Length: 395
Image 1 (tube, rainbow, N blue to C red):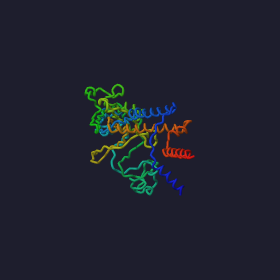
Image 2 (tube, rainbow, N blue to C red):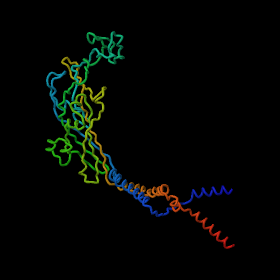
Image 3 (cartoon, rainbow, N blue to C red):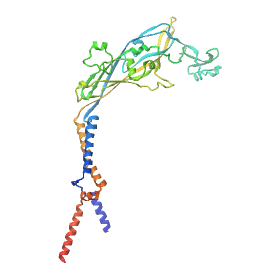
Image 4 (cartoon, rainbow, N blue to C red):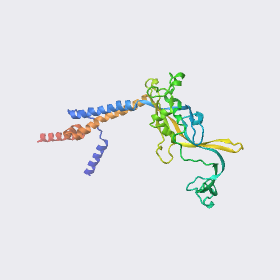
């Protein structure tokens, strides 16, 4: 019975005893250095990381952006496999679409198949199309466009006949060097407007001091002309670490990154765009499907009234304009939240120091005795002293 009562009392003490802080002055230089050093770390975290690096005292807002682009330039294609005389072209021929948005394509190389009409013709020799008799060419199976006939492709090879735009495209790979390497001198005008709705802040990449005379003669340079919104294609590719003449052969994808990261606690005139360029496709050295290309056709009527077309497999550089940015401005709520978090960290410093004091120092048992005092133990000692005094008096 007595043991159960004792266990119950210990549980009640553990559950309901109230602990109050007790100040203990410890004349130890080592412990004092640990205490102050830990406080210093917390303050450096607040000032250096929270305030300077993260700017956690600011309200933040993401950029809302609109972009329009316009390419200018012309090129002359010398005689090639598909043309026997020089051809002149401008952006209406080589830029797709002609009115650019955030993404546009500049044609630099091509394979042209002229005078195609819907007809019957032998398929190009491939494992699935080579045949020796009609039974090797089930209609619509081994060759989806096939009509079930095996015909002569050449004097030595027979292939399945197909219904298609004939003659078929002879895709032996893009010509090298690129046909339209003059595209490297095309220029690009980027008009970009951004808004930070939370702060009612509006900005455009054509600065207020930029006038028409400046736009007619300027060209972007990160050092000498960082405010010019006109870019030369060759320079952008070069800034991305690529060679234009190499990229123009099989094509690729280039990113134009406009960074509008701004600190609006300072003068708003310091909020300017920062441009960078990088190649986005990582398949230039791949054997399968390298570069970037697609097909399109130009349709017309023959003198006999038959529909005909010119098929173009276009290789070139696709430009993607990517606008990123975040703006910050002083806000009372994030400031209070982060200040409260810092004060919480500071309140933990004495706890860490006490742990070191009571576990790592030589006099830890001495400090522990003075650090923790149980009032019930003192009451028991006082009662014992009174009992002994009464006993001695009786004797």
